Every structure is written in C-alpha cells, then in structure tokens.
Image 1 (cartoon, helix red, strand yellow):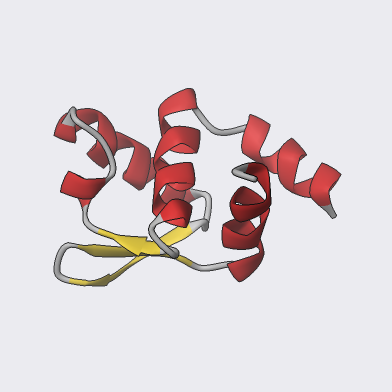
Image 2 (tube, one colour):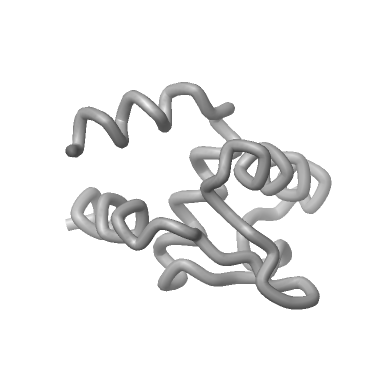
Length: 79
C-alpha cells in the first residue's frame, strides 16, 4: 500500500507534495493561507491536487484531502 501511495505522489510537483503534506499535518483540512508562504504557488499546487483527485474544495476557502489513507501515510512519516 505504501509503495502505491509513494508511486502516485511521485507524479505530483514538489510544491503539490509539500501542500499535501502540510494539509495532512492539519488533519486533512485547511485554508490556502495555512499551507505555505507563497499563495500563488499554494493555489497552483491545490489546482493540481484537485485535478489528480487528492483534494476537493469543501466550502469557501477550505480544502480537504479525500482519501484518509493519505493523511495516515503522512502522519506515519512525521514520527
């Protein structure tokens, strides 16, 4: 399972992986301003993550990771 997730994550840009990691560290939900210093880069990363089906816009300004396994994967990496 871990290998499959890692393979999929390699397809993402470094900024998208960084935003996904930060979103996971926030429990799977967050606002763009909480995901990085450069809002333009964060928005571009979020757009890629939505295109690839990792993230959806839940409500105004809140983005959510769709697969709880992704949150779990990053939580294990921070130990």
